[in-house]
Image (cartoon, rainbow, N blue to C red):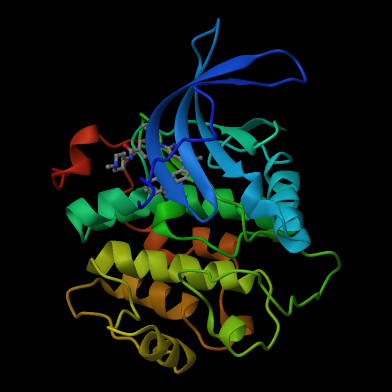
Length: 297
Ligand SMILES: COc1cc(C(=O)NC2CCN(C)CC2)ccc1Nc1cc2c(cn1)c(C)nn2-c1cc(Cl)cc(-c2ccccc2C(N)=O)c1
């Protein structure tokens, strides 16, 4: 019999953190990503609600999987920024590892994209400003995320962007270091990772360029019917920008999707780009934009 996606056979209805005696009621199943299942967890007593990422230890038998999970926790627990998902705590029991994270009730930008497709340029400026500020904070700490994608950009009740899922993140240990491998497959993967030329902060700029293109155009820049063909287009930097996209927006996309990583602007330079600084940028957005384009009269 096939297991249900939200199979919770080894996840107790009440989860106890044996380090401090706090317990959490397992509520709604939100979905899964990689090895993890995500549930709404309610802290007994306070009623505070978290997004609980739960990983079965049966999936952490191999040393490299244990190390990957430990690295994700080590990096994420050290972060504190309004555009980074807050890491509250983690603990384990016989069967699982539990990570308690900031709940983002408006889910992720992937759901927004699926519903709206292309956004207006002021909305794109609004989301890009927060994404760039969050990644600028990471890069200042010498951390590369390496898997920036719409599904990892969560939205809270105020539609503030919260970067999550540090499962592929890495720390640049010394100036000029180029990472040679990444254990996993980034969604918006940069050409230098595919060609194994060594990579660093510029891969996040590439991924943000793919996100920018997707928000402006309504579909990803290198999308094809086969992964092999998509990878070929990425390696050849083969993409086109529809003519209705503004000059400043197109120029920003082109600068971020340069084949040579050293030609790409830094995140800080992007925050000062013409597209980001010329043109209306709303201070906040109403929840109605999750389903309908706003009018900025
Ligand atoms: C009310 O808050 C949420 C509701 C829902 C929701 O209603 N999902 C529905 C999907 C369709 N099915 C049929 C019913 C449930 C999803 C995410 C929420 N919030 C949330 C999730 C979070 C975080 C913060 N907030 C953090 C931090 N991480 N995750 C997280 C973790 C993992 Cl393991 C998976 C996923 C995940 C769930 C589904 C799709 C995609 C993803 C994804 N982005 O990976 C998300």
